[in-house]
Image 1 (cartoon, rainbow, N blue to C red):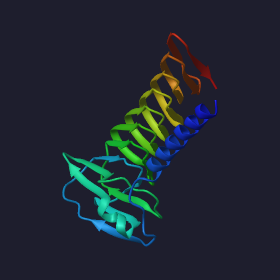
Image 2 (cartoon, one colour):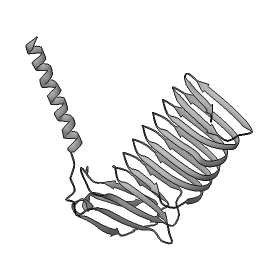
Image 3 (cartoon, one colour):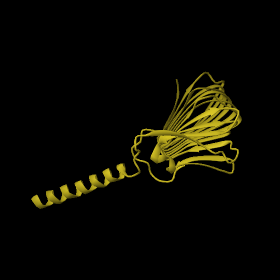
Image 4 (cartoon, rainbow, N blue to C red):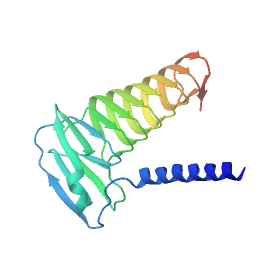
Length: 239
């Protein structure tokens, strides 16, 4: 029995050690926070933030990128533009830091994405005819919008918080993610929630819902038409 307990204790220690190693893996900041303006090599209408970075979006008269981070971490923060999309990510893992922020000024946006633990925040209203929002893999995305057609998707434990106004909304949440659009006023909405995800919307005219595998849809407002489609477990609630 003593031998068995000893082996279990050793195994637990090794597992905990491995976990600690994973948590602390990455380049730590040196504590000296500096800012650097990046050269904008091309126009962009899409932004994707990832790798645990904090990204702030502001509409302006020109496209501009400014990075604020610990001095020794600047070299690892990438802001590349490919085919009209600005990719904000890192070339290697970053550990502890005093700052890892990227400020993006844009002239026009039609797509905003957050993934891999990034935190993307809109500092001004995003105005677009057709706008796509996507948050995945534990990321956070929070924006205010004014759009004709809006697509919003979340997955893999991510959060998306959207406010403002839109004529139509296509909302899709899966895999334990949360899509909160209760402060977004829409006329028509198609909402889908699956695999333990939650969607909250605010609809005035027509609402169509699809829920499965423990998904939940909550809706505010008094839509004229509500059509609910359920398969397996799941629920639709009027708030």
